[in-house]
Length: 143
Figure 1: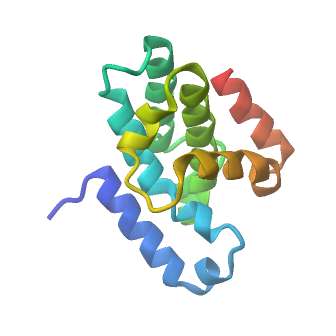
Figure 2: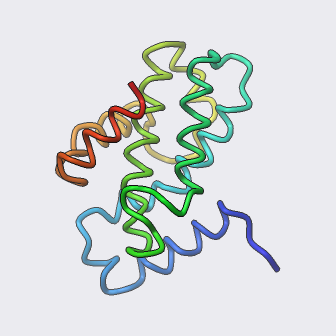
């Protein structure tokens, strides 16, 4: 049975988390967020309450997730390559929360953590997680 992108990402991340590399990575908890953030962006893209300017950012972030060409390609690095996707998703979600009602985001969040705190946490550690060069490039994509 074929898996869609979301299902494949979840399977890949779960498998990686069971590996020696995944278990020892200081960024595992952020890689684990990738499928949930992708799902949230997909839900937000369909929400009529999200402003059109934010929907354009969401479309870009979703395209970035599924594109094989990005700053840290999953094809080369495995699931750790989702870290740049997670950071970009956090930037976009943060933008939505600043430019519209944060309740729009929270009503679509399926994760266990508080999405508002989680996004801030990702933004706070992003440059450590990705390095300043990649971090700055991602910020420019959203602003």
